[in-house]
Image (tube, rainbow over all chains, first blue to last red; front, side):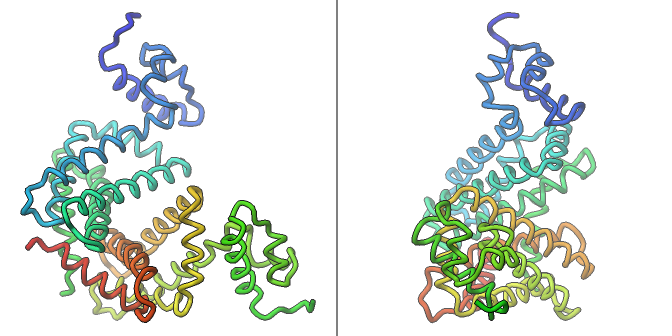
Length: 188
Length: 188
């Protein structure tokens, strides 16, 4: 095996998700993940702290993308539009990866500790979005409210996308979910 | 000490919060809580499973109040108005107890495990609200979105109330926060 492996990180993630699905998350070892990916344990630990981290590394990337999108939105953009830009940026991360995401959600959903970690990551995303909005001069409580609303749309839109027909992409589902949120806040 | 103690539960909660503030949550024992309340450990365990439960017993009461309010809202009420009724019902729980709540938040906020448990309780509240809305015939994703929005208003409104001038009551702050949420969802 050569020392340099193209996309070792992606191969490890793919191997891990396959094994978590086949054998169960608890039963899978790092050694098995590395072997399935044709890599060493040492390489695994260069990319991930542990087997749980394989499931959550994407959450940090997602948060960075969202924060950058809020910071980069036009100065004239309303807070909700800056958050819409964040959802759009986040959606791009999942292009073409719905099967991988479904496998991941199945593992996370079936372990209490992993579901709790998911909640923590979402709370961290809300806090980061609120901070990015305050940096744009949005005062409280509008900044926190808009951030929480963004995370609500992300959660609900993401779940809807996972069961939506294959041709519907995540960005589209997110836009529709945000539009729906605007509807439900209005009393008839 | 007589076998019957009026409001043993409330006295235990008050004693626990005082001790958590004075000595720290980790350092406080159930024996000390019972002693401060003038009760036995046995009585403590009739009311609470452990010292953590003292901090979270209110979350279950809150959830029940919210679900009942959604179920009891007039059939003609829009989803967001049913959730507004839930926030109103929840607010009543905290009347006159702001100092107790502040002590509780200080303890929860300073321990990672307790903050995580708080997130889990809020996620459980969102799921229960969504179910109560679906029981009113609200389809998905509107039910989940409205429920998440309700929890967002609860979180942000609650935090605002804790630092608000003393004369402002929680129900009023919740109504204003919900109104603010409606504003931020509209692009100008």
